[in-house]
Image 1 (cartoon, rainbow, N blue to C red):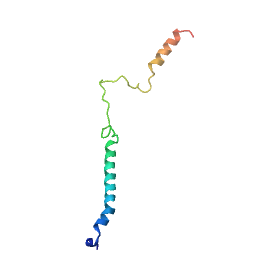
Image 2: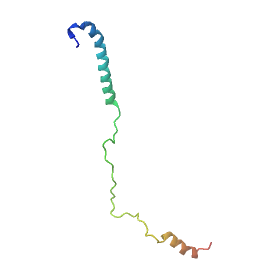
Image 3: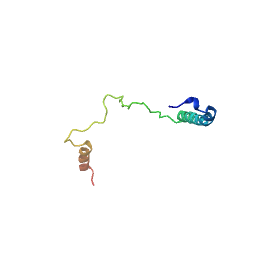
Image 4: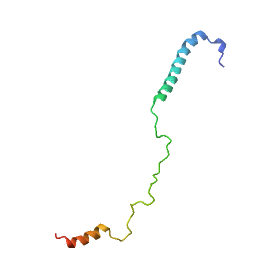
Length: 83
């Protein structure tokens, strides 16, 4: 068991005191550095969902098996334009 009455306090404080000062400075320095680190501005932001302002968009798929209008028109125009 540690007997605190036998400890030479002035001599032990000369050794423990600087250690406590260094530890306190290290904790203070770490807190200062943490305060100045750039924070992520998007932290905690939920994923966004795009809501269109139009009720019907113009981008639709053609039904399966139908020919695109460009092919139909090019077939009509190819007969009237000489090559």
